[in-house]
Every structure is written in C-alpha cells, then in structure tokens.
Image 1 (spheres, rainbow over the protein chains, first blue to last red):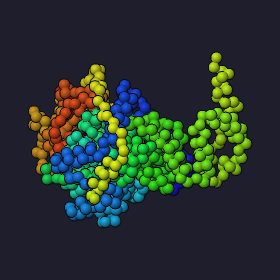
Image 2: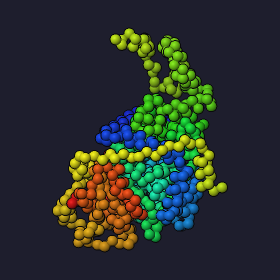
Image 3: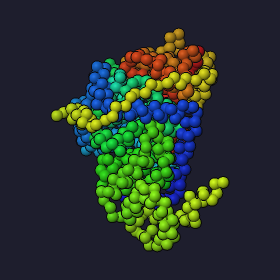
Image 4: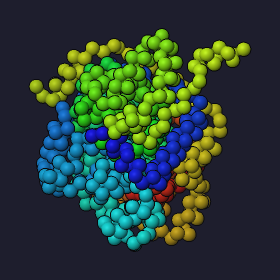
Length: 452
Length: 186
Ligand code: SF4
C-alpha cells in the first residue's frame, strides 16, 4: 500500500479533487468560527487533554469501575482482545437471539474489526443506517472520512446509485429528495430489526453509562425499536466522571462540523424493561499503543475528524489514499501501530505544518508523532529516495550547528540538483511538485542586515 | 487467562506516570440566557414558539395522530401511548416535557420519565418539547451539575430536528428522526 500512488489515482479527476479540498476547508472554517464564540476554548482543550492523560494513567481501574457499574445497571459486559474475538462475541449474541438482520449506526470500531463482512459471511444482513455510510455500503466501499463518510462522492454519483438501488427518479439529484428516499428505505429496516449495533463516543466510569452522539438520530431509531442493543467500544473511550462529558460535548461537534452540539446525545445507563444492552470492550492493539511512550497520546483521540479537514494532504488526496480505517493525520499515527510495514508511507503523507495539532480538541501532538514515526520507519527500513532524504533531514534538524552550515550548502545544491533525481520514478514526492526557488541569503543574514 | 484478565494485566504491566484529574472551572456566562437559547435553537433549525403558537400549528395542519405527555396538555392527545414502539410509526406529533435547556447550544435534557417510550421523540414526524423558561442554564457544565447524580436508565440531550449533510454537504432536515422540533417556552 503506497499513499502517493493512491493519491495520484484520486487526483485523476481534478475537478472533484478540487471540490473535495474546498469542501473540507469550508468545514474547517466553520470549526474556527464557532470555536471563537467560546472564550474558554483553549482552556477546554487543556482540560480535555488532562482528563485523557488521567484516563491513560488509570485505564485499568476505570475499566474495572465501568464494568462494575454497568453490570449493576443491568448491562452485559464483554471483553475482546482483538477484532476476531469482538466479531465472535457479536455473532454469538445474534445467534442466541436467532437474529438474521441487524441495523448498525456509525461505528469506526466495527469498521476496524471488519464486522460487516464477517457477519455477512455468517448469513446475517447488515444495514448501515447513517446516510453517508449507507451510501458507501451500497457501493461496497468503506467510509472515506470518519465523520463525513461519503464526502468523496458528488450528488450525481449518489443519484445514479439510488436510482439503481432504491428506484428513485433517474437524474433527480436533489439532496432532499434523495435523503427522503433513504429515510423511507431505512425506516423499514429499523422497524424490522431485532438487534441494533452502535459505536460509543464516551463511556463513563463513575456511572457505567455510555453516550452516543448523532445528528440523524439513526442510532436511537435502531436501538429503541430493537430488543437487543450491542454497543462496541474501544477501551480508550472511557472517561472518569459524568461531569467530564460537559467538557467533551462542548468540544466534539464544534471541532467536527462547526455546530454547537450534535442534535442527539443519548446516555444509555440501563436497558428498558424486557430489553438487553450488551457492551463489548475492545483492545485490538490499543494496549500496544499505550505501551509506546512516544505514541500513546494518540489514544486520546475523540474522533472528531478536525485533523482531516484541516490537513492539506488529506484534502488533496482523499480518504482512500490512506488505505486504513482511520485516515488523515491521526490515522497516520494509529495505523503504523497496527502494521508498520503495510502503512509505512502514511507518516510521510504530511507537510508537518502542524495544523492538525492546532485544531485537535484534545491537544494530541499529531505532527510531532508523525515525525517520530518517520524516524522509526527510516531506522527500520531504508532504501527509497524519500527515506534517504528524510534520514538526512533528520540528521540536520537534530543539530542546530549543522543546520546553519548546511543551509548555505543546500541552497547551492538545490539549484544544481538534477531533475533526474528529484523527479525520478523512485521519488514520488517529486511528482506534482517543483522545488522552491532558493533564497540568495539565509534568513539569519537577512535578519542581521535588516533588524535595525 | 480470560480476555478481561489479559487486557487488564497488560495495562498494569505498562509503566505509567500518575496524572491528576483536573477540576472543571465554572464557565457560566451572564448574557441574556433566554435569548441566547432561542438563538441556539434557531441555528440548529428548530423553532421556539408560544403555547398559542402551538395551538395554531396543530389546527392549521389538522394533525390526527398526536400523543401529548405534558401535564396540563393531555387533552391535545388523540391517542394513547402504545406498549410497543413499533405502533408509533405513523405518529404525527409527540408533545413532551423537557427538564431544562442549555443556552449555549439549545440542548434540552429529557429522561425516561419524560419519554414514555424511548423511541417516541425519534419516530414521531414532528416533535414538540414544552419547557419552563426559568429552567434554562448557560452551558454544558451547569447542565451536568444540574443533572447531578440523577439516575435514569436513559437520558438524552436533543438540540434540534434530525438532520444530515451527507450528500454534498447540503443540509437536509429530517433524516430518520423527527422532521421538525418546536420548543414551547413557558
Ligand atoms: S486526532 Fe484530534 S483532531 Fe484528529 S480526529 Fe482525533 S480528536 Fe479529532
């Protein structure tokens, strides 16, 4: 899997790529506007980050506390070491209830575990109910963004798809018309399902309750009509106290889509009478990441997607170029933790501009971790053009004196660097890029001359 | 070893620095809370109306399938709450009591006690929430203070009608849940 190769596929359709870039920037802009209406915004980010630090430091205790409270409230708690065990647990519950069709609301974790194909192989119909997810499911594609799953598609694509699948009018591209058709189609599914599966945004150790946030209300339509609710939760989703939700709910939707809060924020504490709630607590590599001192911060992520919307690479290369369940800057930190060989190009899919770190509501040092991964990866492999140049760059930036000296050398070298090296097939970085014109003097020299 | 033991043991084996849990300061604001609330509901594509506005809305649309769970407004109901939520599929209007609202984002807190059936505010075509203006709080921190240790099997903040922007980022109201939200402030 190579990010540059896949990115160039995405860029084939230049007009669509431009639209993708502009649309996500628009969402980023909305996030900026709304964050400025909260005077204590930066303080909230600090609080969120500190709460998550505390969670990571006491994860075992909080999980035990969460389990104890949840059980006392009548929720059945399961533990899964990896994706396979998670899938087996879910299937086991479905089989016990002789359930052949389920409705599911957006859950990145079930994507991560490849639950859909697993259930389908076992004869169960899975219907994703978030509109964007249903659209990509019809196309047999994974979501291309964690908050905006179908952001890579135009309404024309969706109109054609719905015409084929839902028999909507040919050529009718009106989003309201198409959404209404999906509403009718999915309502039938909601009314027919015995079991509903959801993800979890936050699990509260203090009370054993968990919170699910949506705008469409699809998670609730599913679980309140079904007899059994299965909630799949990564172990890092735990927070200590109920009042911590005040901090996270203020940050989540504002960071994600620029709205003050999602329209539905449901707190599940015990099943309605005659019904069941199951929660599956999933590790699947999270404890490994916790053990990596340099990367464990990535577990603070609340999956708002802000780092994707702001990333100049994500916006211009599309979610699929990452080949991983969580794309974009945070995905480029999480994925190599799962399989460093497969995802070795992802930490390089960044300008290291730091914009991801600037917008992250829980203050994950994303760009620094990308830089750390680059070092790990170059150490462990080595021979393509990019990794060599990165190795050199790492050496230079590590020693300020060397940087000063090599600055003037590099300005000379850049001028004469033959295109055959910069733009060779080996070096995909050179594609679509021109080397910058080199300044005549160093910034330091310029500053000395001009500071008075 | 069970997976539970395995996961917990693995976490325990990782050396971790202790980190204190921060206190959450009181961020409440003093600007005009009701007008901020109204503004928030409107920006979420909901609407704030009066009691007579509600009557006019019901009359002009000649709704036939109404369930009202608000004390003092039971007479607006045209049917009883069924025992199975699936029977709510054709419901046109649900009128329920909100416990309190949050000015900064328009979120309204409801629990099992207000809902009758948990599916009610989602499955209905239009949702009306009745609320006391004096119950408004400024932000989410105050909201959780107010909820405190309250125990309910299900609790919910609703801030607007069901909506989506999954098709080319065009906002469409009425994805799966209620197609409109009206808040009656008393
Ligand atoms: S890393 Fe930060 S910005 Fe990116 S999705 Fe996670 S919480 Fe949001």
